[in-house]
Structures are given as structure tokens and as C-alpha cells.
Amino acid sequence: MSASVKGASIKGARGGLILFVALLVVTVAAAWFLHNFHRVEHELDLPPRGEAAYNPLYALKLALQADGVRVDSRQRLNLAAHPLQPGDTVLLLNDPRSLSPPDAQRLLDWVAGGGHLIVRTPDLKGWQDSLTPALFETLGLFVKGHDAGGSTDCMSFQVEGEDHHIEFCGKARFSFDDVVPELSWGNLGDGYVYARLAHGDGRVDVLSGFDFLSNRRAGGGLFGGTGVDGGLHDGPHRALTRQVLAPNYGKGTMHLVYAAQMPSLFRSLFERGWRIWLPLALALLAWLWMRSQRFGPALPPPPGERRSLLEHVRASGEHLFRYNKRALLYAAVRQAFLSRLRRRDPLAAALDGDAQAEAIAARLQVPAASLRDALQAPASHDTGAFRDRISTLIRLRRQL
Image 1 (cartoon, rainbow, N blue to C red):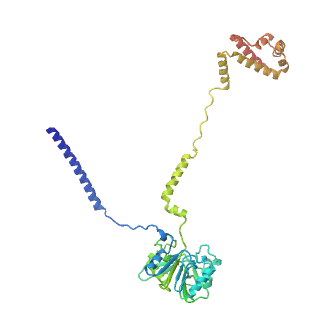
Image 2: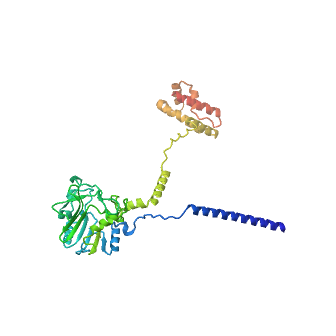
């Protein structure tokens, strides 16, 4: 009884010691981890979703709404469904060449009644003078492309208390034809990047680009641009946007007309779905590799026959001879002899009996008696006669 109690106490002490060591190791590991590591926060820029993914003026829309300005943001101008009122502002992010002459004239008539229109110059890609927007022709503006000596260098822009900025990099500039602008930025030699023109009771602002008021952060983004500005996230750009929107700011509705710039389905799949299509493509390539034809070394030639034709014939004859089929063998040899005789001596082959034997014997110069015996079938049990007559017929056949 005492021995069993002593054994149980030893096992309990051993288990307690193991548990204590385990807790000590866990405590030391936790203390080391907490001493060497601490919690930090990281901000990650997630891709835009919802309207922010396709509306490059979404940040401007939210900023105006937060400032108490009425905003109508849409993809198309559609003047019939969205009539404009004096005191409204229209910002056209689209290429002005997409405006039809009737719509351009209606916009200018509305501006003359007190509206404020903000447009940009066309893209230089594929630019031709014959594609000058109808709106620009009416206002007396013309785009200075590369062939007209227009510059696409960046313009310096400085706001007090902010870092130095450059704007309108790589954008098409414009010039005037008998027009005196209220405000302008640029010169006649290289072209202007900004101008405010009076038209009746309203104003028309023309800029080389709208990158400074887009959603994009610094370093480029979803909606293109030069990558040197950060859209409305930069303070100088907010100041510039406020100056551009100044004429009718807070008086009427701000119409933000943008061209939906959703990327294509294939581009979205390529950029965001690679975690799915890349493994599938690798699996497809592996399957095709497994199923494809192998181009290894040439196969060895097939093994030759173990016996020649003569050996097969001899084996077949021995088989017939062993199973008492000598008559078949003799008939085959006799028929072969007669077949050659018909080709070499048709007259002798046409004879019968002794006449045939004598004719053949005279031709081959052999005794007629031996030839006559050779042409007669031997008895089935007479092996010697069978062999003699077979050998005689084969020898005579060779002599023909």
C-alpha cells in the first residue's frame, strides 16, 4: 500500500514540474514578445469603390456639398433633361470636341444670360487643326499644337505657405484671336494654360487640364494625368479650384459633367483578378504540358524476325511430315515441277504418261525409268521412296 502511494506522489510531482516549466517558458516568451514588439498603425490606400471608381470629380462633389453648394453630378450634359439657370456653373470634364455645334451654341446662349462655363483644351493625342471644337471657334480661341509651336512644359504654381508646385504638364495650350481675357495665365508665344473670358453677362473659363481638381492622390492614380499633383488632396489645388469656381460660387447649382472612365473588363481582370487567373493559367499550361507529345530520342528499331522464311518453310514441312501429311508435301513439289515445265517446255507438259516421261528424260538427259517413278506418288509408309522422289523432282526442277 505504501509503495503504491509513493509511486502516485512521484508521478504527481513530475506532472506538476512539467506544468511549471511549460508555464515558465510561455511567460518568458510572452514577456520577450511584448518587450521587443509594439502595436503600430498603418494606413493603406484601398482602390476606390462605388461612384468614386468611375467619377473623377467625386471628391469635388463631396467638397462642394460639404460647403453648402447645390451639386448635380452626371455623365452627360443632356440640356433637355437638366435645364440650366442663370447663376449656375457647368464644369465639362469631357473633351470639348464631343460637344455638337447646337449644344455649344445653347451653352454660350446660357452663359450670355449669366452662366459660368468651365472647359478644358482637347487632348493632343491625334490632334488636328480641322478638329477644333465648335465652342472654341465661337469664342475666338485656337489650340496651339506641336505644329503651331505650342509648348507642353509644366507651369510653376506657388501658393503662400505651400510647397512649390507645377501644373498643366504635357497639356495642350491655346491662344486668342481678337479676344481680350479678364484673367490669363501664359503668354502668346508658348500659349496660355488658363483664361477667363467675358461672354455677355457670364464667364467662360478655359484651362489646359483638370488634373488639379480630380480624385487622384500624388504620384498618379486611376484617372490619368502627369503624376506631379495630387488632385484636391493638395492645398494649392484646392485654392486654384476655388478661384476657378469663383464667379457663380454659391449662387446656383454646380453642374459637374464628367465622362465615365471605367476601365475595361479585361483591364480590371488583369489588374485585380490575377490571384485567380494566374494559378488557372499555370494549371492549364501544366495540363497542356502533360498532354503534349514528347520529343525524346528516336525509338530503337523493332527486333528482327527470329527465323528466316526458309526456316519457316522447313519447319512447316517437318510438321506435315511428322503428322503423316507426306502426300501434301509431294503434291506441292510435283505441282511446282510441272508448273515450271509448262513455262519451259509446253509441248512436254501437254503429254501424258510414258510419252511425257520420255520427253522430259530426253530434255534433261536422265533415265526415263527414274523420271517415271518420280512423277508417281509414293506409298504413305515408304519414307525412303518419299525422300528420293522429292529430291529428284527438286533437282530436275532446277535443271529446267
